[in-house]
Length: 576
Image (cartoon, rainbow, N blue to C red; front, side):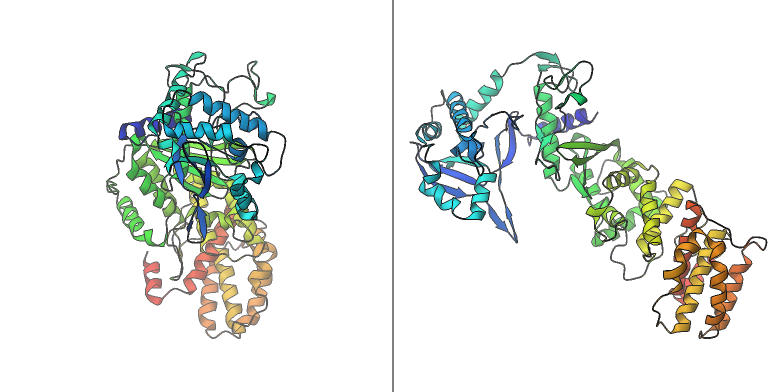
């Protein structure tokens, strides 16, 4: 289903006239060889430009790079690295001469019938290039003297210019390459993707996915006997897929990965998304919906309010019934792992995201930067240094899948948050929101998972969480804010998991604090109300399970936020 959907994506770009032609691809280059029609190298023109503080390499529509170049010597047409163009490499391994000779033979074969000064210039360059003394050429020497330019020289790609014109733009060279592609012949099969007769392809094109150690690798491949099945070996085709279909899906996926409105990163995972039929508005809407910024709050508020009222969703002229696809990919050493593939209507994906934001909604302070928490913040909260990249490698994909599909949240996320709290971290808005959402979705909890304090709830874990917050506030008032270590630092973890061993101690301590607070009547009254909600027979259970620990934390967070709520808002909460 993944490959078929990507192939259809490519076909939709053909209908709009923006498709990359068969046998071509978008590639970057670092230098252009400035040649004349006699093949004389006059200069190496740097193509990189400075954008702010970073260097950007321009991209061009070029003949596609051949697959399977890891070991085999396979030259590319009109764009290649220093081994194939000059016979030079940073670490000489003895292959440079063979690479150059193969590139010379390859270009001579393709351009043999091309009648243009550009074709003649490229052929003569390969024929006249002094391979034995390549490094001593004045232009090459000047570049290799500087370490930065030398690194770019050896790691980058080169394109050709003849008399100031890019070779890939010459009609004669385009036609020569197209004829080469048409003449390619192989075993004819019924393609698994298109269902049509096509030439069988053994090596599929590479996907440029961030994080892959080799830069780009095929999505579909067989490169070890352990991955073979049904008597197949690593020398057999990866699947019964035709050449055109393989080109279609690889081209579509690479294009999506280069378009910022069609992919997002979360941790080490990349989420790629697109709408059927080339629907760009749906993809653009999802791009900000799935990763809301500060200035997206008003747009999301309006959509969520419509959804809350049960009104028909109509977002920025999006077609709600249009099929929408989400593909989560993860780099795995030299491979690409598919975390998940989800297909539904855009309306379904939209509603699942809105439900997620509603589940995450919880009382917060007025100085919060994000009204709606994007996934990367949730993921970062599971780490010690609050860095998304430090999160569990599989957690990002699991979280994204639960959001877009409406499935339960990964318990890995819930356990990671509990672990950070047990380690002594503060119960902030993000942690409380995650726990609230998991309680709703995974445990079907509704009584204590309100946005703000539920004063009527008598659930013991929730009440004890409120009581702990009250006892902490009493200690803070009694000390005048001058505390080296609070009861939260010393007792929160044990009170959350084993209340019977902790609360008797805390209540005894509160007797010392009550005499020093400014408003003892208020604290004693609230403490009495909370204790009255507990069972007289067994007020403090011996242990709480994971669900009850979450309820305890929500009660603690709600009560803590309530202490900082204005009198007007407190009256509104009381009347809910």
